[in-house]
Length: 383
Image (cartoon, rainbow, N blue to C red; front, side, top):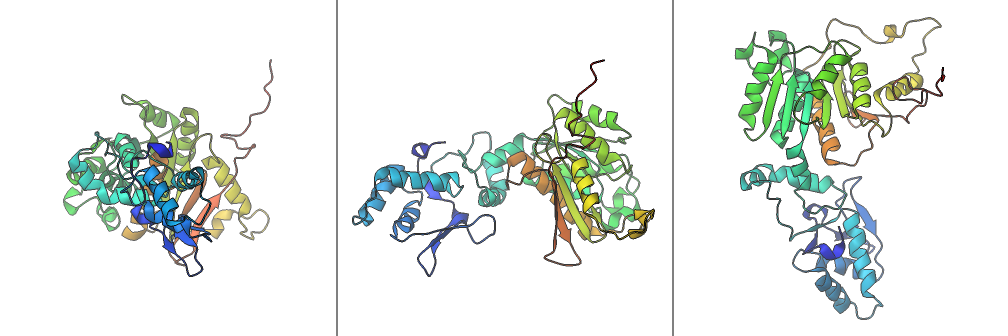
């Protein structure tokens, strides 16, 4: 996108600039990771951002800056370059861009608040502020596990406007589920979870296509079958199932082979987190896990099993808060992978420690050459 293609450039409303006490220009809000500060000794940058209000074309903006600062040598290319820099940094949108015809007026009303949030977090130039919402509408998502984490993720994605969500879950609704699996109601007891989930999700948003099947994933072949099913490939796999224990390894293996981006989320006591992975970009799940094990300092005696350092129970302690947070993080990861907002590099795990508010969970690893899943296999014996 070139600056001269902008019909009526404007600073995004969420990125409205202001002047600091020392004359600098702050833009992009005060949110860490979005905002920036620009030195402005001549005062013309402030004039520029004020002129970028969506009522003028590029040449009119240039003329406004020159008119207010005749004392400064401001060649037109320098002003255009400044507009280009602000646009490429994600602070400028085209107020004259029409909404995509693919999105109906009803959809624009429904998702308008979500569009503005994505616009706020978006730091890349777009033809239209509605482009991320359109990407979400076109997306096909496979969700394995529709319990506490998966149910919350499904709810958030369907409410946000995902195009197609296919849910996979083998269990029925039990009374002990209802303390955290808020997609279900008491009248759903004994009903297959996928059946109850589909009814609830379709009632939430009739514009989204929600399908499902009652099925248990018992090995890599099941993931392969699920990803291969349908008229076109899935854009993202979301894993919200925690059994068998090896299921994440299976998902990682199959997604690496198919090139499918994926995310997995869950809770461990007060720790709530999501892992985000894209084959060919950053660490895979095995890389991240191996690096995490190496970084641990459990201070165990030689030969002592590491299981002694962590409680093992027949169930995972959880309530609606921890399950809901993990599901919302999983939906957020899906938006990251589908829309590129926010622009977080995959191959990481992030989340919350509810025991210490403000103490986040963040794990990252480089891709490991010795990784058994994605590492370099080394030279092969030609024989």
